[in-house]
Every structure is written in C-alpha cells, then in structure tokens.
Image (cartoon, rainbow, N blue to C red; front, top):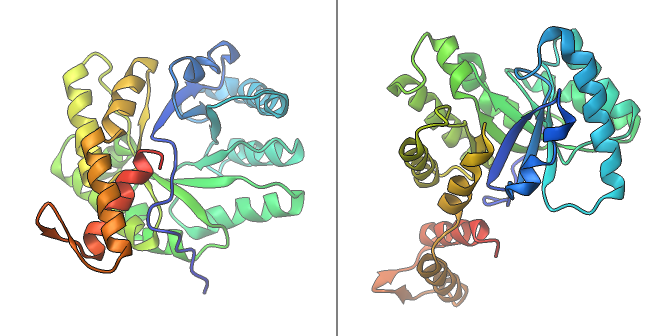
Length: 285
C-alpha cells in the first residue's frame, strides 16, 4: 500500500466556476471575472443527447490552450467513469493529448475509479491533476482509502452537497449534510489534500453566499465552487486574508523559524504555525 499524503497546505485556486461544456462562447467568462479555474462541465450541465458535441467542444478548447497565455486554469468535470460517456471523456482527453490543468471526477466511491483514469493517462503519456468529488454516503465512508490507497495522487477533494443530500434523503442545508462535509474535511486534512466547497445554489441570495463563503473559510476549505459568474468576486474576497491577518501570519512564521516565542502575547507552537501557513497560502505567499 502506498501513501499519497501531500503537504498540509497545497495551494490551489480559491474560485472554481462551473461552465456548461455545450457553449464555447462561455468558456472565457471565468477569465473575464477573474475566477481561478474555469470548470468546463461535461456531466450535469449537459443533456444526454449533447454529450458528444460538448466533448468535442471541450477537447478543442483544451487543444487551443497550448497557444494561449492565460491566467485562469482549465478544469474538466467528466461524466462518471463507470458510464459510457465517462469512458469516452477520458479516452478523448488521452487520445488528443489535451489534458486540462485539473480533471474533476464525479461520484467517486473507490480508489479503483482514479486508478482506471491514471492507467489510461499513463499509457497515453499524459498527466492531469485529479480532483475527486465526494457526493455519496459511500464516498464519505471510503474517503480515506480513496485518498490514500490509489496509484494516482489526488490534487483536491470537491464536496458535492446537492448529490450528497439526494443520497442521504435530506435537504442540502441540513445538519446531516454538514456532517458529511465535516467528515470529508477531516479525512482530507489527514491526507494533506485541500477541499473545495460545494457551490452556493441560490444565485439571488448575496447575503447567503457571503455566509456560505465565510463558513467554508472558517471550516478549513481551501476553495469554493461557483455556478454563476456573479459569485466569483464574493468568493475571491472571502478567501483573501485581510492585510492585518497576513501580517500576523508572517510574524508567526518568523517567530516559529527561530524555535520559540510569542506574538501578541500568544505562545507560538506548531498548531499556530500551521494556521499561519494556511493563511499565507491563501494570500498567495
């Protein structure tokens, strides 16, 4: 058995904007609103009859990235690898050697799922960072194995609140769904893998979005997904530490590097230093 434990504060972009894979005119929207990642969706946002067309559009978009200088990274959410559409997604990316920055794999319940993708990509000589979506009770139960036992390192975990609620027979805002996210956060922290929070689905509730972002930050999430361009500014602002917090974190790391000391009367230990490092990662330091 191999361990895929990574550093405790790997840096990933803080805002991930879902974009339907069926309309190439929207692929650049994420750049215009300064999202960290344009997440091109081949799964839920695409009707069954449109899967082939969306796949071709996304492959074309990824191919043209080689000749473009962009700040916004590209991710692709494929269909479930156990489905015909999902297998076609994986093969299309591998055969065209057009891997995105991140490959988002939905409804992962076993390390065998990511192993399959890793094997296909290895044979094709292509590489992509894998992001697993945990969206079911089975995924929560087996998350430690998913993150630790597979052959492919996992770049991040994305929590899927809507599908999780459906699997549990609960409303998305209930305690049982929050408990599932907590379990994901615990297992991911143990594996050293960052967590991307589920989108906030009410695009008309600005205050609710702010509360959701604040909760994600305070709970230890490294990023948050969005379903509308108008949500990106709030997400980016929420995950950007204020200047005084960055100053505090910088001082903490300086003191910790000298072995022992205090900041603002607080004794600095490794737990405080870890918190400071996370703040600096969010600040891009």
